Image: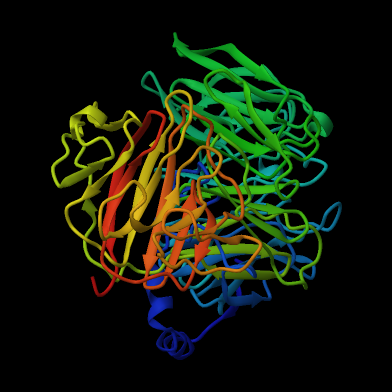
Length: 619
């Protein structure tokens, strides 16, 4: 049997572990055990991540080198990071600790040399073992801790198949006790191997074509567990327990580049391929077979090899031929295009904590809120020079880090948000009534109920007469979240912070503007100080007792009828405004004092919900 070509001694491993920092040790909880994550859906469950990055990008924690050349991304489990690459004439699987130091390397057959040299598939971690398939179809099982070989087979040789033009690109699926792989060819399509021995458990019938460049998807519908995949010229499904062929439908893409794993959603299957587009089928199970009925077909999104994500009823991905490298959002229910925008250019994608992480083919990295309103790149940076070839490896978000592979290099960036040093979150609006709120109206004969009401958990403001609703309590430093929507004709309103002094229509405070089209502007009334520099900063001494303002840097509002989210951080003399995940304003030199928080009535019906506040340290 082939052995690890590098294996650290017990003493060396112990020394490396002792050297880890507390931050690195905490990364042992990071879990991304296979290509596209735990559920193979390219969705990270990470939360509390940065909503925007510094101008030069998030902090680069470390760079690992010596992974070999390849396009494999990383898998992470039990405090180790795995990937694969070409070393000279061999395919090599590597394991690193959470600081990027190599623990072991193990060979997995010959290297893929041409065309596009390098590995494709990502290692799959299952308990104490790691599984990998090389571009030549060499499937290996390794000890996760040491890299020692357990078993190895050549699926192309064993099942009488042949390779495809660009080399096999499959990342293996572990289904219970089985390793699922796709040799294709005249004898079979998909096979299940015993994960402990490599012996054949079942062998699905041939689909009449070779393997595609994709990885399989496991789904269950109407009591039938099925494995879905794209072969070179077709889409097939096989019974995951028996290997019986459930369906085959012809699907021929440009250059036979069927690459994206099929997506399963509520009894439907979605595929997308180059110069074909995206297709959604309904699956119907009957008499041991599955019938497919086409629901819609779209030529707006034709996926190449960068991946897609399904989030809240929308499919996000990059279109290659039909929309020339633009980022596209489709409505999954109808197949209609929601947007097609340039973004950072053609590339790969993953999703975490409400954001799309996009990586173009030239080292650029973009952060985009996953909202159907627009493809708004709120932050951008480039990984260092040094790696060869295009940046095709898919990004990974795990353990508060963003992992980016480029050739022989792996970069680990810190994208975790700052730990909350403040108190518990306070629900300022309880969704039921106006308990805890006071009011001021310019019409002394009007009551609170004349202007504000609660309907189905939403705070409704009629907009007339003018005034504001405000908290009974005062707050100085905090993070405030407010969701708002203009249900009809948009008008004017605002979120008032640190209100003090005599009640007036524009009291002594700072306002986070909500006027339609101007959300993100900031104003200080009655002499309230707001720092800044022209041309964004301005003053009007004769307005509102002495007004100063700081205009937003960009617009990020959703259209009327859609909900928006304000995230307002008042931290000492600095006030930061984030609209729909994008930072649009930041002022320093602001007045610091406890004050009430208000919601303005200033013309136009406006709805509010999810009004919460988290005090910062010292409150």
